[in-house]
Amino acid sequence: MDPTFKIHGLSAFYGAKEVLKGININILPNSVTAIIGPSGCGKSTFIRSLNRINDLILNFHIKGEAFYHNQDIYAKDVDVFDLRRRIGMVFQKPNPFPKSIYDNIAYALRIHDFTTREIIDEIVEKSLKKAALWDEVKDNLRQNALTLSGGQQQRLCIARTLAIEPEVILFDEPCSALDPISTAKIEELIHQLKHNYTIIIVTHNMQQAARVSDYAGFFLLGELIEFDKTEIIFKAPKDRKTEDYITGRFG
Amino acid sequence: MERHFDRELEDLKKELLRMGALVEGEIFESIEALKNLSIERANKVINDDKVIDELENKIDEMCLNLLALRQPMAVDLRFITMSLKISTDLERMADLAVDIAQRVLELSGKPLLKPLIDIPKLTELAKEMVTSSLNAFVNKDADMAGKVILLDRYADKLRDTVQKELVDDFISKDASSAGRAVPLILIARHLERICDHATNIAEDVIYMLQAEVVKHHSEKLKN
Image (tube, rainbow over all chains, first blue to last red; front, top):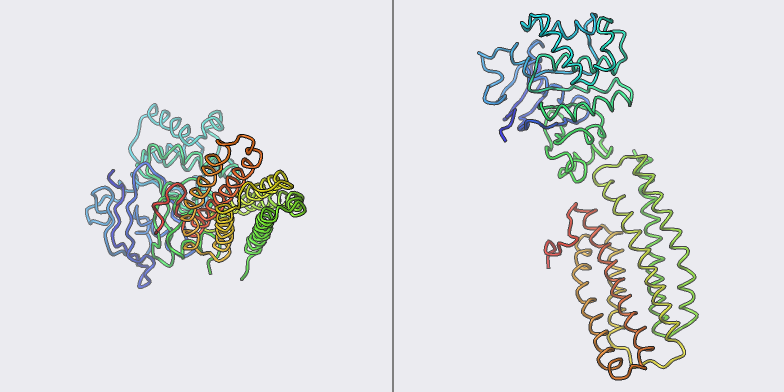
């Protein structure tokens, strides 16, 4: 199986500060990869490097190779707009637009040139169904999205990401602001979505990483210490630093 | 900083060691009862079993609480799940000591069919395997655990020798000897089963320490 991402010797810098150090990792399609590690270890920087969201930060630059399929992510001719369409992202805090539920999804479609009303209606419904939100909102699509609960808002953001049919979804701590029931819904959704998408999730919650992922990578001080099948990382990690972190003995 | 969880793990280890020491004592006492055909010692083994049964329940509950409340990972997960298995093996070993004690009661008051030769060898082997498997657990010694596993084949051979000799030389020649021969055959069987449980513990210790499954894969052990 060809990896979706092939990352080789990737280092990332904010100015002179090196926050990722020579990362080597392959991310396989139709799987969930969890990125774990303490605050400041570089895990968010890593996933944000994959769709070049970090480009928006002044003085950010990288060294090394990052390939999405056979496309060099950082090549000069890359259409970053198209890259971010194919590599969607869901953030820690639900961030719906202050618009209706319908328009939250339609807005993304309109800026990506889906223009006819029928097509947009169809995609809005399909996306909300995929995000397991349709049944809860189908009668109130014109309601302001900010009136939804936190968990519903996060699923709306997932629906918004799905609407433009990405291949990859990057989740940056998607449940840290949610209650256990909303968290369980998002985790169940991730299980379903992996059949059609490549998923990478950054999480501080060890149990969540264990529950949802197929592969897990442990980052520490900008280095990828260990990467393996999730069951190995949580049952019998090879590196002492990984073991100390996941058993709570860290530091 | 010591964590509350570390103290809970330490408490579990202490209880498991206490159970191991009691079970080891039960097995040794049953062997002494056999050597001396002592009714008093045999009855003591039978009566003391209740304490071990209670301890098994207590350890099971401690493990389940830790699994439910702490959601342990990696080395902690392996320690707790193996503790559950080890306590089951220890309890079965104590039951086998009770079985030996009951055979001693059956044999008492009757002259032995023959001087015991291979059964004492099997008792020594069982003692060594029980003690070494528990020491391997206490000292986190995977090499010692590996040695215990490799000893199990001798226990099987000694059991077979005892059985064959008593059947061929006594039961098949004189059926009336069965009343005194069968308890000895069963004792050899009980001792061999004790060795099997010591082997299980040794296998669990290796998994706990190295995350290597050697159960049913003794070829993974260094000879």
